[in-house]
Image (cartoon, rainbow, N blue to C red; front, side):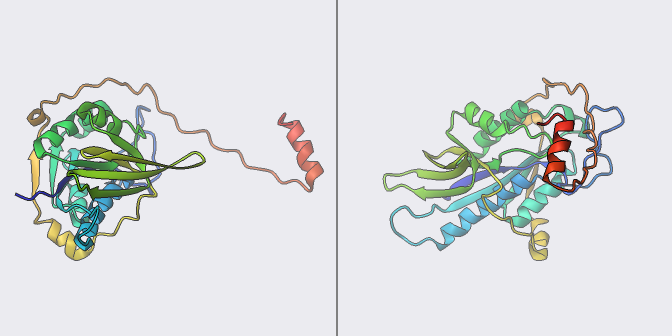
Amino acid sequence: MSTGLRILVPIKRVIDYAVKPRVNKSRTGIETAGVKHSMNPFDELAIEEAVRLRERAAKATAGAGPSPAIADILAFSAGPAKAADVLRTAMAMGADRSVHVQVSEEEAQTGLEPLTVAKLLAGVVREQKSDLVIMGKQSIDDDASQTGPILAGLLSWPQATQAAKLNVKTLEAGGHEATVEKEVDGGTETVKAKLPMVVTADLRLNEPRYASLPNIMKAKKKPMEKKSLADYGVELRQRMQTVRVEEPEQRKGGGKVEDVDGMIGRLKELGAL
């Protein structure tokens, strides 16, 4: 059996980032029927980084702190049947295989809250004996940014959130260490921890590759295992309720002034000065 690292990359199917969201008629959420979906952009970064770690390992030479070999990259998603599409995309980008926990569209919208997903991922980590979890820092539909930190808490693993740079090396004394740089107010913070570990990806981590046609065709032959929530002992439980969703107020058009005095006068009229 290979002694390389086993990486888990959770991904989510969301409304495509280029689509303008519309509130549904009942004003309880966003309209999803007939709307283009794609992989969550932050999860694309996570898949790309996992593949790059493998590529770095392939180029690494013997010496102090070499990049560890990557034995397996597993893409995972929980969602409706169409979530299989983003798993195929992940495998076309370089993931070796995938696991799909299928739930209904309604269950995906109401029951897959951060705590439920984190419990599900904890079960996957234990089952797959993962050494490293790389995931998006948030999904662009709910912007919760909670799943990664909750998962690290459930596993009692160290975590590094909002990663802008990730480096993993093999320690001479044994084991592996990850160094993560992330942007903070006024500078950059660097953290280190020994694996196993949870890392969440920020937009500056990398530039995801496009899946080539040959790789898309190869991805169709890569294994995708179908699972259920019951396989991991997880039950859907809605803890939060969306009371109402409203469209933002339309912005009023701006006006032009002739000079600085006119601008100051207008600001005084509006009570801004």
